Length: 166
Image (cartoon, rainbow, N blue to C red; front, side):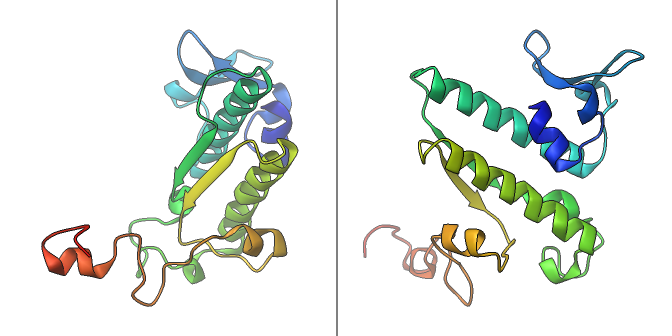
């Protein structure tokens, strides 16, 4: 986790971070005293999303490498949402993100891609998000883009009154 947290530039990463299994939270081993996420001692949207992502990836890697009977997939629902304050006009258009927010979102996805590659495809990550980047590794990883009327739930299901009857 520490290596990945440093790669993402997360708060306290250089001090070492881990999952506190007794409290089920993230703890950073700062020089003065441990900093716990559940006490608000680690803050900001990027840190919250970044530490949650690194902990999920670390747990999945551990389970895969130890051949534990745990499903090896992760579903991420809008990890970029932390960068969309409520007062934004369109409520989710990536064009409204600052360069820093856009780069933070890209780095989260790049780390996820790298870990999936390191695990030889033994981990599947399903991400539902507005984020869309031109990087080749990102574009090749996208299975479906729901835009222009195409969606996860087909419109016919909403209008037919009988989902799955088509």
